[in-house]
Length: 301
Ligand code: 13P
Ligand code: SF4
Image (tube, rainbow, N blue to C red; front, side, top):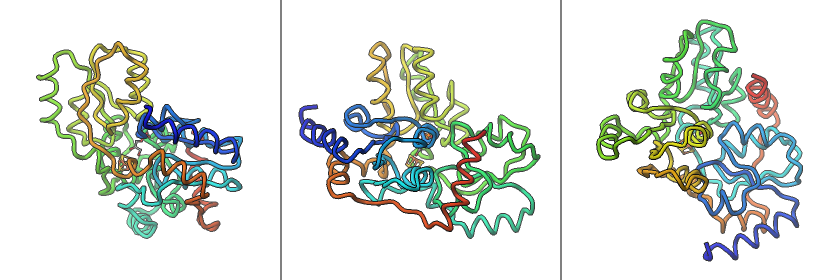
């Protein structure tokens, strides 16, 4: 922790000077998550809590689509991301032209897009969802068929819980698609009694081997509620580190896959972002209005 003291002290001072807040996703490293963040959570919580933030500047310690969402909900504030290269394989898997093509192929079928998409894709959608509210969003539409894009595995995991027919796309999270059912069975054999939680971006065959599946916030709440003796989270590496700090009585088994995009954010580039006012995230106003509508419709569900 001593290694981080200088940067943490500088960031805390800069936050005051610039009237800034730091929003950090659950996959940020503990020194960011526990050291400098003001608001932490899953994608849904970060979108919800971005509304009405009392600050001039929002620094998004997470990936680009999260910063865009924060900007959509705070058009008059400065939104900074410490590294513009912090992307997402899901957001890169689909364009607004793809959505237009899908609409033409499935006339009248509403489009639900995961928040892990660009603002342009959100603008071409009817409503957004996150892994924390996907089922509720799909069912809120009251229709028999929905286009649910772009995460095929999230859509298939949700399809197993609803009568609504979900038409999917071939997008994948490069972190969660790597887990395999054989690997999960191996953990059960190696760690007797372990409770296994998995993020719904994992393949359905992996989720079938778990005891619970939910968003990053869902997994965190599960551990707080159930207090398992031994737990394993099938998700990004920092998640266990951040949750384990609050649960010294629980043994965390920590296989994990790193998200290279989340890991582009560091204390030093957060500090630089505040010192140099970079990198500012903006959204074309023509895209911002319909994209905001899709996010706000989700938040109203
Ligand atoms: P949630 O935090 O919404 O579960 O999303 C996980 C994720 O992969 C975000 O990039
Ligand atoms: Fe995208 Fe997966 Fe990384 Fe989240 S963990 S930012 S979904 S690549």
